[in-house]
Image (cartoon, rainbow, N blue to C red; front, side):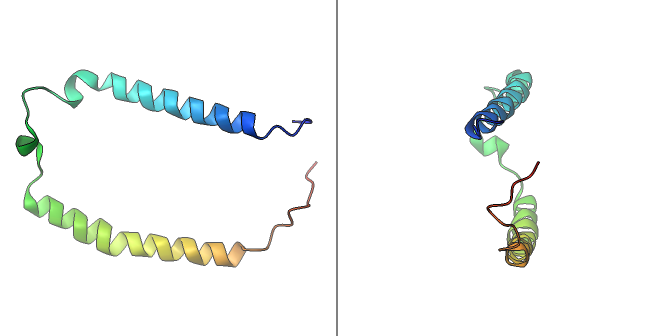
Length: 86
C-alpha cells in the first residue's frame, strides 16, 4: 500500500470474481445445457417474456438509471482528489 500500487488489488478482485463465477458455472455444468433441449424448447412462454419486458425493461430500468444519475449529481465534486486518508 505504501508503494501506491492500486492495480494489484483490483486485478486480484477480478481474479477472485472470475474464479467464483467459473466455479458456479462448473457446478451447474451437466444440467445447465443439456443436449436434448433445443433452443425452441427452451424459450419462455410469451406471457413471461412480456412480463419481463414491461416490468424490468420499461419500468425498473428507467427508475434505476434516474436514481443513479441523481446520486451521481448529488455527490459530484464532494470528494477532494488530493485528500489523504491515514
